[in-house]
Image (cartoon, rainbow, N blue to C red; front, side):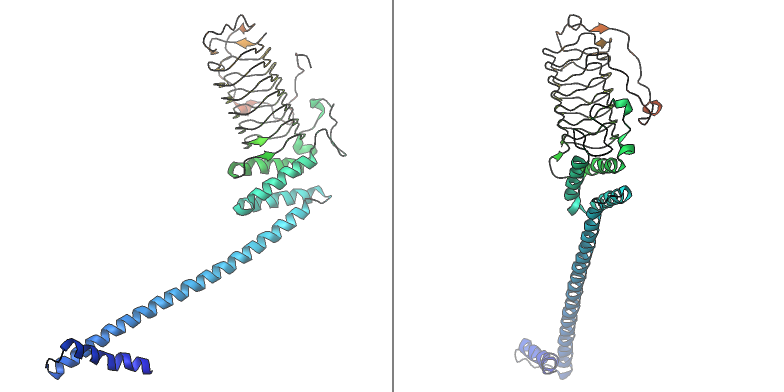
Length: 355
């Protein structure tokens, strides 16, 4: 009260007297000047009160947000812990539920996404090792037509693989390790696996339609009869890969490395192989009709029995006829993928090349 009395009663008169500097004015004018000073002081004090109120509200909002964030993080942590515990269950449905829960957490929490990607990759490596181990896993020497699709024989691992292929589209870490895994007849259509390590994995008859394998490592991978139609293998490392009878129609193979790869009977119709390296690769009986090999590296590549058409583009000066390539008619437009036999019932034809 003393401060307010001083500010609003004493201070205005002092200010007016100071400004008048001893000049004589009428009492009425002096009173008006004092009241004007009081009004100004009231506006200043009112503004300070508003600013203080706004600051107090902002502080309270920050405290509330911090509390809400802590509560949410605690909730996510509890969900994360319960989901991971479910992965160790003997019940298949419980494991699938845990994998879906982790998938949802990763989509909602960018902070936990990398950890969940690592967990899913580890889950696949431990549940689908190569050579196969554990009860119910098809033996290594079983013919591919006698092996059920992954979603049928091990539904939980197919869920983990699908989740991984979705989350890898927005991941930050460089490499994901899926090497030496049993992914025979896995469904990877449309999934993203850029910079994923599939070295020595068994992916025979896997569905990789329109999959993104940019800069993936596929060293010594088995992709026999795999469907890689319209997939992206740009800058992929496919050294020593087994791609016999693989379907690579309209696939992006730019700058990929197929050094010493086995591509016998592979279907590379209309594939874009700009800058691809086929050093010492075996392309015997491969279908190269309409493929763009104009800047590909074909040094020491074996092309005996490969098919070409008028639309196949070869490197300048390359004599494909002398290399054993057979010229034939172009097949025309590719059929719609919707008209192709489903992966669940598709049977891999026998290989004509030596096994």
